[in-house]
Image 1 (cartoon, helix red, strand yellow):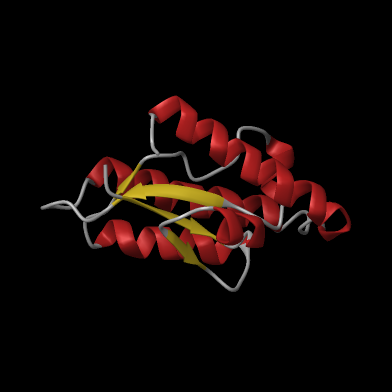
Image 2 (image 1 turned 90 degrees about the vertical axis):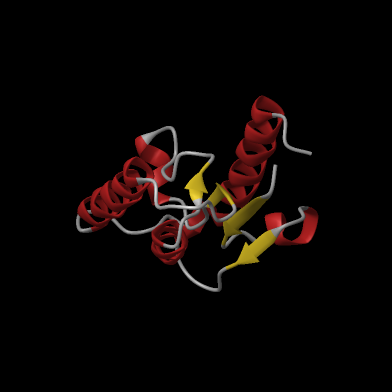
Length: 121
């Protein structure tokens, strides 16, 4: 399966292949993912973390399948809703940069777990 990891996590950049590294915030990762989905890529992993606490992580890695023949409207709706949800939560709180090294490792481990689950090598 052809895939790309969109991430702002330096640990992922240093240790994984097929990485599109984003110099920026988690929101920047979500927006770049949305842009690629608008051109026909599809989500492989869910754009937001599994817990509310992970929304405050400064790092996020999202796996997409490379460009397909047409736009998947469900995937586009998922990423758009993820951006909206992220914005709503960030109005109340800010990224937790105090624990950024922990979040970096958690994001990397969650990504490796996702690869094991979906059998990407």
